[in-house]
Length: 375
Image 1 (cartoon, helix red, strand yellow):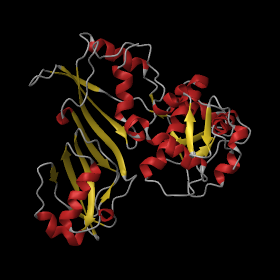
Image 2: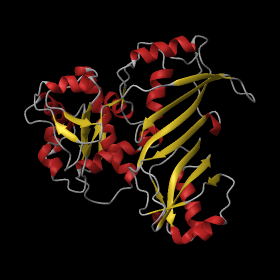
Image 3: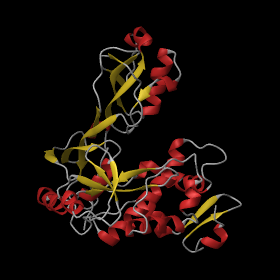
Image 4: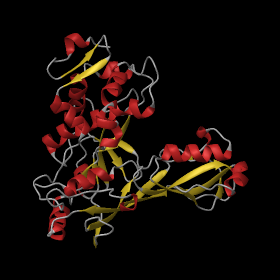
Protein backbone atom coordinates (compact mmCIF):
# COMPACT_ATOMS: atom_id res chain seq x y z
CA UNK A 1 0.00 0.00 0.00
CA UNK A 2 1.37 3.48 -0.86
CA UNK A 3 2.88 5.58 1.86
CA UNK A 4 0.25 8.15 2.72
CA UNK A 5 2.76 10.57 4.22
CA UNK A 6 4.11 11.07 0.70
CA UNK A 7 1.04 10.60 -1.45
CA UNK A 8 -1.73 12.61 0.13
CA UNK A 9 -1.93 16.41 -0.02
CA UNK A 10 -2.19 17.24 3.70
CA UNK A 11 -4.76 20.00 3.14
CA UNK A 12 -7.17 17.68 1.32
CA UNK A 13 -7.21 14.15 2.64
CA UNK A 14 -4.95 11.98 4.74
CA UNK A 15 -4.59 8.98 7.02
CA UNK A 16 -3.04 9.49 10.44
CA UNK A 17 -0.96 6.33 10.87
CA UNK A 18 -1.06 6.58 14.66
CA UNK A 19 -4.82 6.78 15.05
CA UNK A 20 -5.78 5.17 11.71
CA UNK A 21 -8.32 7.97 11.30
CA UNK A 22 -8.78 10.12 8.23
CA UNK A 23 -8.49 13.88 8.30
CA UNK A 24 -11.05 15.43 5.95
CA UNK A 25 -11.32 18.99 4.75
CA UNK A 26 -14.88 20.26 5.47
CA UNK A 27 -15.74 20.66 1.76
CA UNK A 28 -14.68 17.14 0.84
CA UNK A 29 -16.43 15.66 3.87
CA UNK A 30 -19.61 17.49 2.91
CA UNK A 31 -19.39 16.05 -0.61
CA UNK A 32 -19.04 12.57 0.80
CA UNK A 33 -22.05 12.94 3.08
CA UNK A 34 -24.35 14.74 0.62
CA UNK A 35 -24.49 13.84 -3.09
CA UNK A 36 -24.91 16.54 -5.77
CA UNK A 37 -28.29 18.02 -6.62
CA UNK A 38 -29.35 18.67 -10.20
CA UNK A 39 -32.23 21.04 -9.49
CA UNK A 40 -30.67 23.35 -6.91
CA UNK A 41 -31.50 26.38 -9.08
CA UNK A 42 -35.25 25.57 -9.11
CA UNK A 43 -37.34 26.68 -6.09
CA UNK A 44 -38.51 23.75 -4.00
CA UNK A 45 -42.00 22.95 -2.78
CA UNK A 46 -41.27 23.62 0.91
CA UNK A 47 -42.33 26.88 2.49
CA UNK A 48 -39.82 28.99 4.40
CA UNK A 49 -39.13 27.08 7.59
CA UNK A 50 -41.31 24.20 6.37
CA UNK A 51 -40.69 20.97 4.52
CA UNK A 52 -40.97 18.71 7.55
CA UNK A 53 -41.14 14.96 6.99
CA UNK A 54 -41.73 12.18 9.52
CA UNK A 55 -43.81 14.45 11.76
CA UNK A 56 -45.38 11.15 12.80
CA UNK A 57 -44.70 7.59 11.64
CA UNK A 58 -47.83 7.55 9.45
CA UNK A 59 -46.35 10.41 7.40
CA UNK A 60 -43.63 8.10 6.06
CA UNK A 61 -45.05 4.85 4.70
CA UNK A 62 -42.89 2.32 2.86
CA UNK A 63 -43.88 -0.96 1.23
CA UNK A 64 -41.23 -3.35 -0.07
CA UNK A 65 -41.62 -5.31 -3.31
CA UNK A 66 -39.77 -8.63 -3.35
CA UNK A 67 -37.93 -9.62 -6.53
CA UNK A 68 -39.69 -13.01 -6.69
CA UNK A 69 -42.81 -14.80 -5.53
CA UNK A 70 -42.85 -17.55 -2.93
CA UNK A 71 -42.83 -20.98 -4.56
CA UNK A 72 -45.24 -22.61 -2.11
CA UNK A 73 -42.81 -25.26 -0.93
CA UNK A 74 -39.46 -25.40 0.86
CA UNK A 75 -37.82 -25.01 4.28
CA UNK A 76 -38.47 -21.27 4.66
CA UNK A 77 -41.64 -19.36 5.49
CA UNK A 78 -42.03 -15.97 3.77
CA UNK A 79 -44.39 -13.28 5.08
CA UNK A 80 -44.69 -9.53 5.43
CA UNK A 81 -43.83 -7.64 8.60
CA UNK A 82 -45.38 -4.21 9.12
CA UNK A 83 -43.74 -2.21 11.88
CA UNK A 84 -44.32 1.26 13.35
CA UNK A 85 -41.75 3.42 15.15
CA UNK A 86 -39.23 0.58 15.18
CA UNK A 87 -36.10 -0.12 13.15
CA UNK A 88 -35.68 -3.40 11.30
CA UNK A 89 -32.96 -4.80 13.57
CA UNK A 90 -35.05 -4.30 16.70
CA UNK A 91 -38.11 -5.80 15.04
CA UNK A 92 -36.10 -8.84 13.93
CA UNK A 93 -34.73 -9.24 17.46
CA UNK A 94 -38.25 -9.39 18.88
CA UNK A 95 -39.27 -11.91 16.26
CA UNK A 96 -36.18 -14.05 16.89
CA UNK A 97 -36.74 -14.09 20.65
CA UNK A 98 -40.32 -15.22 20.24
CA UNK A 99 -39.38 -17.97 17.77
CA UNK A 100 -36.35 -19.02 19.86
CA UNK A 101 -33.95 -18.77 16.92
CA UNK A 102 -30.78 -16.68 16.43
CA UNK A 103 -31.33 -13.32 14.70
CA UNK A 104 -29.20 -14.61 11.82
CA UNK A 105 -31.96 -17.14 11.05
CA UNK A 106 -34.37 -14.31 10.23
CA UNK A 107 -34.01 -13.18 6.61
CA UNK A 108 -34.65 -9.62 5.38
CA UNK A 109 -33.94 -7.93 2.07
CA UNK A 110 -33.06 -4.55 3.57
CA UNK A 111 -33.29 -2.15 6.50
CA UNK A 112 -36.26 0.17 6.89
CA UNK A 113 -36.65 3.50 8.69
CA UNK A 114 -37.57 3.70 12.37
CA UNK A 115 -39.75 6.82 12.34
CA UNK A 116 -42.13 5.34 9.79
CA UNK A 117 -44.71 2.69 9.05
CA UNK A 118 -42.95 0.13 6.88
CA UNK A 119 -43.89 -3.20 5.37
CA UNK A 120 -41.10 -5.56 4.35
CA UNK A 121 -40.67 -9.21 3.53
CA UNK A 122 -39.22 -11.55 6.13
CA UNK A 123 -38.28 -15.24 6.15
CA UNK A 124 -38.16 -17.62 9.12
CA UNK A 125 -37.37 -21.35 9.19
CA UNK A 126 -40.65 -23.08 8.40
CA UNK A 127 -40.45 -25.34 11.44
CA UNK A 128 -41.10 -22.25 13.59
CA UNK A 129 -44.50 -21.59 12.02
CA UNK A 130 -46.37 -22.69 15.15
CA UNK A 131 -44.51 -20.13 17.28
CA UNK A 132 -45.35 -17.38 14.80
CA UNK A 133 -49.06 -18.02 15.23
CA UNK A 134 -48.82 -16.82 18.84
CA UNK A 135 -46.65 -13.78 18.09
CA UNK A 136 -48.17 -10.54 19.37
CA UNK A 137 -46.50 -7.12 19.52
CA UNK A 138 -48.06 -3.63 19.65
CA UNK A 139 -45.54 -2.29 17.11
CA UNK A 140 -45.44 -5.22 14.66
CA UNK A 141 -48.05 -6.90 12.49
CA UNK A 142 -47.30 -10.07 10.53
CA UNK A 143 -48.97 -11.12 7.28
CA UNK A 144 -49.85 -14.68 6.23
CA UNK A 145 -46.92 -16.99 5.43
CA UNK A 146 -46.05 -18.97 2.30
CA UNK A 147 -43.38 -21.65 1.97
CA UNK A 148 -40.31 -21.02 -0.17
CA UNK A 149 -37.00 -22.70 -0.96
CA UNK A 150 -34.56 -20.04 0.23
CA UNK A 151 -34.02 -17.52 3.00
CA UNK A 152 -34.50 -13.87 2.09
CA UNK A 153 -31.16 -12.05 1.79
CA UNK A 154 -29.93 -8.54 1.11
CA UNK A 155 -30.52 -7.66 -2.51
CA UNK A 156 -33.69 -9.75 -2.86
CA UNK A 157 -35.97 -6.69 -3.02
CA UNK A 158 -36.93 -5.22 -6.40
CA UNK A 159 -38.30 -1.86 -5.28
CA UNK A 160 -39.76 0.19 -2.46
CA UNK A 161 -43.04 2.11 -2.73
CA UNK A 162 -43.32 5.33 -0.74
CA UNK A 163 -46.17 7.53 0.48
CA UNK A 164 -44.58 10.51 2.23
CA UNK A 165 -46.34 13.54 3.69
CA UNK A 166 -44.37 16.78 3.59
CA UNK A 167 -45.68 19.27 6.18
CA UNK A 168 -45.35 23.00 5.49
CA UNK A 169 -45.30 23.57 1.74
CA UNK A 170 -45.30 26.72 -0.38
CA UNK A 171 -48.68 28.02 -1.54
CA UNK A 172 -47.53 27.38 -5.13
CA UNK A 173 -46.19 23.90 -4.37
CA UNK A 174 -47.96 22.32 -7.35
CA UNK A 175 -46.37 24.70 -9.87
CA UNK A 176 -42.99 24.33 -8.20
CA UNK A 177 -43.31 20.55 -8.29
CA UNK A 178 -43.99 20.71 -12.03
CA UNK A 179 -40.83 22.79 -12.48
CA UNK A 180 -38.84 20.26 -10.45
CA UNK A 181 -40.23 17.39 -12.54
CA UNK A 182 -39.16 19.17 -15.72
CA UNK A 183 -35.63 19.79 -14.45
CA UNK A 184 -35.30 16.17 -13.25
CA UNK A 185 -36.63 14.65 -16.47
CA UNK A 186 -33.29 12.87 -16.96
CA UNK A 187 -33.34 11.45 -13.42
CA UNK A 188 -31.79 12.08 -10.02
CA UNK A 189 -28.22 11.36 -8.80
CA UNK A 190 -28.26 7.93 -7.18
CA UNK A 191 -26.25 8.94 -4.13
CA UNK A 192 -26.27 7.61 -0.58
CA UNK A 193 -28.37 9.36 2.05
CA UNK A 194 -27.31 10.60 5.46
CA UNK A 195 -28.59 7.45 7.20
CA UNK A 196 -25.82 5.51 5.46
CA UNK A 197 -23.17 7.27 7.58
CA UNK A 198 -24.53 7.16 11.12
CA UNK A 199 -25.36 10.07 13.41
CA UNK A 200 -23.59 13.21 12.16
CA UNK A 201 -21.64 11.04 9.71
CA UNK A 202 -19.57 9.48 12.49
CA UNK A 203 -19.03 6.22 10.55
CA UNK A 204 -17.45 7.87 7.51
CA UNK A 205 -13.85 8.23 8.69
CA UNK A 206 -13.79 4.76 10.27
CA UNK A 207 -15.07 3.26 7.04
CA UNK A 208 -12.44 5.08 4.97
CA UNK A 209 -9.65 3.89 7.27
CA UNK A 210 -10.98 0.33 6.92
CA UNK A 211 -10.87 0.65 3.13
CA UNK A 212 -7.33 2.03 3.20
CA UNK A 213 -6.23 -0.90 5.38
CA UNK A 214 -7.64 -3.29 2.82
CA UNK A 215 -10.15 -4.57 5.34
CA UNK A 216 -7.38 -5.90 7.53
CA UNK A 217 -7.45 -5.75 11.31
CA UNK A 218 -10.54 -5.76 13.51
CA UNK A 219 -13.67 -6.60 11.53
CA UNK A 220 -16.11 -3.70 11.54
CA UNK A 221 -19.91 -3.85 11.48
CA UNK A 222 -21.06 -3.72 7.89
CA UNK A 223 -22.80 -0.35 8.39
CA UNK A 224 -19.46 1.17 9.41
CA UNK A 225 -17.36 -0.64 6.83
CA UNK A 226 -19.66 0.36 3.96
CA UNK A 227 -19.74 4.02 4.97
CA UNK A 228 -16.30 4.67 3.48
CA UNK A 229 -17.24 3.15 0.12
CA UNK A 230 -20.50 5.09 0.12
CA UNK A 231 -18.76 8.37 0.90
CA UNK A 232 -16.33 7.85 -1.96
CA UNK A 233 -19.23 7.13 -4.31
CA UNK A 234 -20.92 10.40 -3.34
CA UNK A 235 -17.65 12.29 -3.85
CA UNK A 236 -17.30 10.60 -7.25
CA UNK A 237 -20.78 11.81 -8.22
CA UNK A 238 -19.80 15.42 -7.42
CA UNK A 239 -16.77 15.16 -9.70
CA UNK A 240 -18.63 13.35 -12.43
CA UNK A 241 -21.58 15.74 -12.60
CA UNK A 242 -19.24 18.74 -12.57
CA UNK A 243 -17.47 17.23 -15.59
CA UNK A 244 -20.23 15.71 -17.74
CA UNK A 245 -23.53 16.25 -15.95
CA UNK A 246 -25.95 13.41 -16.59
CA UNK A 247 -24.08 12.33 -19.72
CA UNK A 248 -21.54 9.55 -20.19
CA UNK A 249 -17.78 9.37 -20.57
CA UNK A 250 -15.77 7.29 -22.99
CA UNK A 251 -14.86 4.01 -21.33
CA UNK A 252 -17.76 3.98 -18.85
CA UNK A 253 -18.98 0.72 -17.33
CA UNK A 254 -22.60 0.49 -18.44
CA UNK A 255 -25.49 -1.53 -17.03
CA UNK A 256 -28.31 -3.13 -18.99
CA UNK A 257 -31.93 -3.17 -17.85
CA UNK A 258 -31.37 -6.72 -16.56
CA UNK A 259 -28.37 -5.70 -14.46
CA UNK A 260 -25.58 -6.98 -16.71
CA UNK A 261 -22.38 -4.91 -16.96
CA UNK A 262 -20.29 -4.15 -20.02
CA UNK A 263 -17.61 -1.63 -20.89
CA UNK A 264 -18.13 1.12 -23.44
CA UNK A 265 -15.85 0.21 -26.36
CA UNK A 266 -16.40 3.29 -28.54
CA UNK A 267 -19.31 1.64 -30.32
CA UNK A 268 -21.36 4.37 -32.01
CA UNK A 269 -24.56 2.65 -30.87
CA UNK A 270 -23.73 3.32 -27.20
CA UNK A 271 -24.93 6.92 -27.43
CA UNK A 272 -28.22 5.90 -29.01
CA UNK A 273 -28.87 3.18 -26.41
CA UNK A 274 -27.95 5.53 -23.58
CA UNK A 275 -30.23 8.26 -24.91
CA UNK A 276 -33.09 5.78 -25.22
CA UNK A 277 -32.67 4.70 -21.58
CA UNK A 278 -31.75 1.12 -22.54
CA UNK A 279 -28.47 1.27 -20.62
CA UNK A 280 -27.21 3.25 -17.62
CA UNK A 281 -23.84 4.57 -16.49
CA UNK A 282 -22.39 3.05 -13.31
CA UNK A 283 -19.97 4.48 -10.79
CA UNK A 284 -17.41 2.80 -8.51
CA UNK A 285 -18.09 1.07 -5.21
CA UNK A 286 -14.35 0.63 -4.75
CA UNK A 287 -13.06 -2.86 -4.00
CA UNK A 288 -10.67 -5.56 -5.19
CA UNK A 289 -13.09 -7.22 -7.62
CA UNK A 290 -14.81 -4.09 -8.91
CA UNK A 291 -15.18 -3.99 -12.72
CA UNK A 292 -13.11 -1.11 -14.08
CA UNK A 293 -13.71 1.26 -17.01
CA UNK A 294 -11.82 0.74 -20.28
CA UNK A 295 -8.07 1.17 -19.79
CA UNK A 296 -6.64 4.63 -20.49
CA UNK A 297 -10.11 6.12 -20.94
CA UNK A 298 -11.45 9.38 -19.45
CA UNK A 299 -13.77 7.29 -17.27
CA UNK A 300 -10.88 5.30 -15.79
CA UNK A 301 -8.91 8.50 -15.19
CA UNK A 302 -11.77 9.98 -13.18
CA UNK A 303 -12.08 6.91 -10.95
CA UNK A 304 -8.32 6.64 -10.40
CA UNK A 305 -8.04 10.35 -9.53
CA UNK A 306 -10.42 9.92 -6.60
CA UNK A 307 -8.45 6.90 -5.35
CA UNK A 308 -5.25 8.95 -5.40
CA UNK A 309 -6.86 11.49 -3.08
CA UNK A 310 -6.96 8.85 -0.35
CA UNK A 311 -3.40 7.66 -0.93
CA UNK A 312 -4.35 4.52 -2.87
CA UNK A 313 -4.06 3.25 -6.42
CA UNK A 314 -5.55 0.39 -8.39
CA UNK A 315 -2.90 -2.10 -7.28
CA UNK A 316 -3.30 -1.34 -3.58
CA UNK A 317 -7.07 -1.58 -3.92
CA UNK A 318 -6.87 -4.99 -5.58
CA UNK A 319 -4.73 -6.19 -2.67
CA UNK A 320 -7.69 -5.50 -0.36
CA UNK A 321 -9.13 -8.95 -0.87
CA UNK A 322 -11.71 -8.69 1.92
CA UNK A 323 -13.37 -5.80 0.07
CA UNK A 324 -14.94 -7.05 -3.15
CA UNK A 325 -16.46 -3.81 -4.45
CA UNK A 326 -19.17 -3.43 -7.09
CA UNK A 327 -20.80 -0.91 -9.43
CA UNK A 328 -23.82 1.33 -8.81
CA UNK A 329 -25.89 3.29 -11.36
CA UNK A 330 -25.02 6.97 -11.16
CA UNK A 331 -28.59 8.05 -11.87
CA UNK A 332 -32.07 7.06 -10.78
CA UNK A 333 -34.28 7.17 -13.88
CA UNK A 334 -37.07 9.72 -14.07
CA UNK A 335 -40.03 8.47 -12.07
CA UNK A 336 -43.72 9.17 -11.80
CA UNK A 337 -44.51 11.24 -8.69
CA UNK A 338 -48.13 11.48 -7.59
CA UNK A 339 -48.94 14.47 -5.38
CA UNK A 340 -52.12 15.24 -3.43
CA UNK A 341 -52.87 17.92 -0.85
CA UNK A 342 -52.84 16.76 2.77
CA UNK A 343 -54.90 18.63 5.35
CA UNK A 344 -53.79 19.77 8.78
CA UNK A 345 -54.33 17.15 11.47
CA UNK A 346 -53.96 17.07 15.25
CA UNK A 347 -51.76 20.14 15.47
CA UNK A 348 -49.74 19.26 12.36
CA UNK A 349 -49.45 21.67 9.42
CA UNK A 350 -51.13 20.94 6.13
CA UNK A 351 -48.88 19.62 3.40
CA UNK A 352 -48.66 17.38 0.38
CA UNK A 353 -48.55 13.61 0.05
CA UNK A 354 -45.93 12.37 -2.43
CA UNK A 355 -46.22 8.83 -3.78
CA UNK A 356 -43.51 7.18 -5.88
CA UNK A 357 -41.45 4.02 -6.24
CA UNK A 358 -37.66 3.63 -6.19
CA UNK A 359 -35.39 0.71 -7.05
CA UNK A 360 -34.11 -1.23 -4.06
CA UNK A 361 -31.02 0.44 -2.61
CA UNK A 362 -32.08 3.96 -3.63
CA UNK A 363 -32.76 6.62 -1.00
CA UNK A 364 -36.07 8.50 -0.86
CA UNK A 365 -34.32 11.28 1.08
CA UNK A 366 -32.17 12.03 -1.99
CA UNK A 367 -35.25 12.60 -4.13
CA UNK A 368 -36.91 14.62 -1.34
CA UNK A 369 -33.86 16.88 -1.06
CA UNK A 370 -34.26 17.70 -4.75
CA UNK A 371 -38.00 18.38 -4.46
CA UNK A 372 -38.04 20.31 -1.20
CA UNK A 373 -34.94 22.48 -1.50
CA UNK A 374 -35.10 26.07 -2.72
CA UNK A 375 -33.13 27.37 -5.64
